[in-house]
Amino acid sequence: DQQVKQNSPSLSVQEGRISILNCDYTNSMFDYFLWYKKYPAEGPTFLISISSIKDKNEDGRFTVFLNKSAKHLSLHIVPSQPGDSAVYFCAASASNSGTYKYIFGTGTRLKVLA
Amino acid sequence: KAGVTQTPRYLIKTRGQQVTLSCSPISGHRSVSWYQQTPGQGLQFLFEYFSETQRNKGNFPGRFSGRQFSNSRSEMNVSTLELGDSALYLCASSLGAANNGYTFGSGTRLTVV
Image (tube, rainbow over the protein chains, first blue to last red):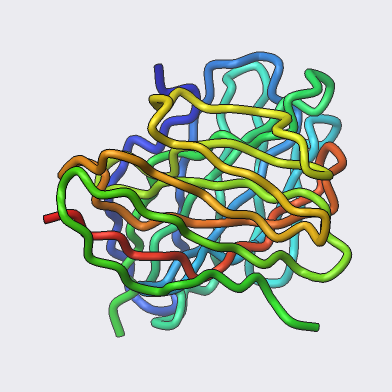
């Protein structure tokens, strides 16, 4: 049972345009969400997070939006740069459950075309 | 400060063998989590250790086990290797409280032949 889903395995965007990566979750207990970026042969690196008490969080070119009623979050990258080409994972946790683990999606491979 | 160190980086084993992977977390981090990454499956949670105790376990068979030492270093062991165990094994360290993000190591690429 995949509790965190990234239904688009890949996405191609022109340099300078907006990249939108989507993530859906099924567990209503999830209250903390993160996005990670992964380059080949490296471990994932943290990008941005959001708590369920917010619906938006920005950090430079990266903005994460959370729609709790739809159990959906998205990562916007504006403007997209060729160096953003990587696999992006969303992850979720239920901080009040005492489980101390993150559930990851299957990832979306972003390709930014120069 | 030093990051999360995983050794070895690459490993080739034969079916039926056993393997031990090592992870040294960031200094001061007491939680170590292990994930398996395979194409199309994303990162699958194996287990998490905090202060030498396993706090969480994923849905993997008993062939997968781990432990954590008093210095927070962790090892993961896979016995009776199967071809399907070929994957990138990632270790992540954190301070261990809820909503503490992870810092990942570069992973160990295990190939079972």
